[in-house]
Length: 351
Ligand SMILES: C[S@@+](CC[C@H](N)C(=O)[O-])C[C@H]1O[C@@H](n2cnc3c(N)ncnc32)[C@H](O)[C@@H]1O
Image (cartoon, rainbow, N blue to C red; front, side, top):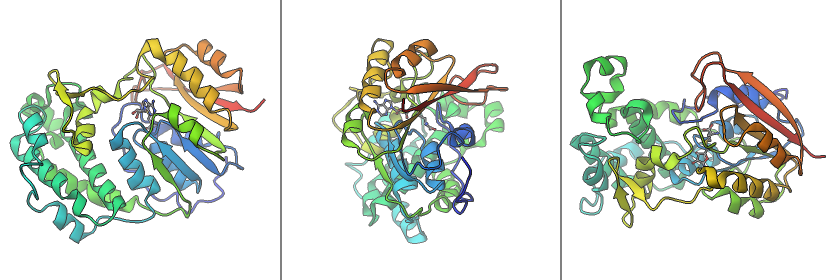
């Protein structure tokens, strides 16, 4: 598509560190959005990088992810019509723990595992003060930036390993990435200006949902295009193992068990897309339930499960499909982005 409306394109999405994020492919994906499309659903929005690009194009954006911390990023960056964190808000967030006997979960679970005691105590006191901000978008923005600070602090930016503090004690690794030893408060303060600068109003009523997509699709009306970027089995499909700590932090779970070496919460939320045994039947149901949306764009990678022929076979009863390919030159494209493999976009139109 041509960028008829360029007034929001100078805003900059704070660069994500999220497995499978399509941030670097956003321009490539944008060219397959027909001009007459007004309302777009980002069905598996993750870091919100594609939802943000759609907001920049002036679309009405409906964004969704079944994990709460991703939904909060959607509230903060997509639904938010203009609330930023000001000096007074930061004073509230950085003040003492408002209820230390209630707000000590991060210290109890993750001190000595992912964070030093001082950082966990800071994360807990910050969390105890979030509700004192007088607006849901400020609250969402505060938690979004804190989650991003936490991923910056751990090697590889996820929580499916138990080496965070071991790596943070390794001078060679610290030399390559000083964030490993910087206090969370400092990382937060550094990230804040970029997040504040990313907030804008595109004059549309954008909405961020926190639902399983299979339940959300039948509830939506008048969507012109849906972008599907589901987790594909074979490549990091289990987002709850990678980002459990962020979900625990925003939910502040009190009614879960915390299992294995990483202290992941249990039971997990039901995805339907993170196990080989369920993936095909979930995709089938998803396409059936998306039949009221005329245009579909589907991200896919040639290392994904199910294979491309199975995918096309699932789509063909409903839509015509064209396959667009972008070949990676390096391994820096996110999920499955090994040099020589390709990122695929299935462009689906009504028959
Ligand atoms: C490949 S990632 C999306 C990446 C995103 N396009 C980006 O640019 O950051 C897939 C996302 O699907 C979410 N997810 C998994 N199962 C889901 C379900 N049943 N309904 C909604 N979201 C789901 C995961 O939490 C994850 O964020």
